[in-house]
Length: 144
Image (tube, rainbow, N blue to C red; front, side):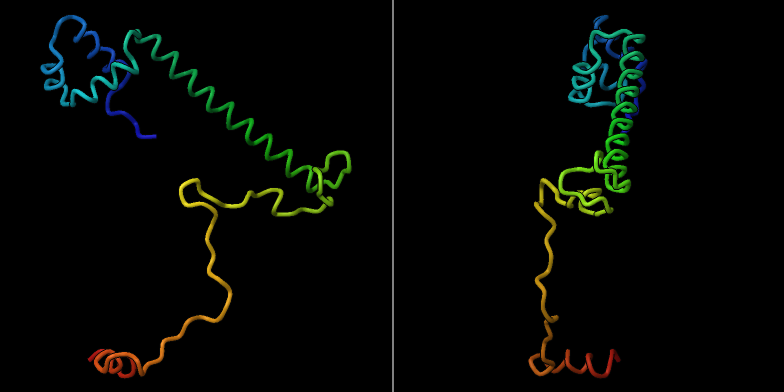
């Protein structure tokens, strides 16, 4: 995520200035930001004190750390089930030996769909005879 060029204290200071009566256009000119950016910051941080903003940032960081820990624990459990070979720990359909299909999900993107592969078969070759003479000379003799 891109880091803001303004700290929480600066944003809250700008919001306080606007609440004190400074026109938005003047405030935006003073701090070199567009009105759209100001209103976006106001929607995000409006009505908060500096202590509230710091607490929110601390909670967001803690939440991200806990999410990473849960993901790592889930991954460790899957790997442990597949590597150990303990029947009580095995996933349905695993034989106790490591299988890449259990540990690594298939690559796909929500935008492009499943990973596309070239169809099997020989590589396409283009006959030299169908190329123009000027290009054919480059192919056989190299550039001059």
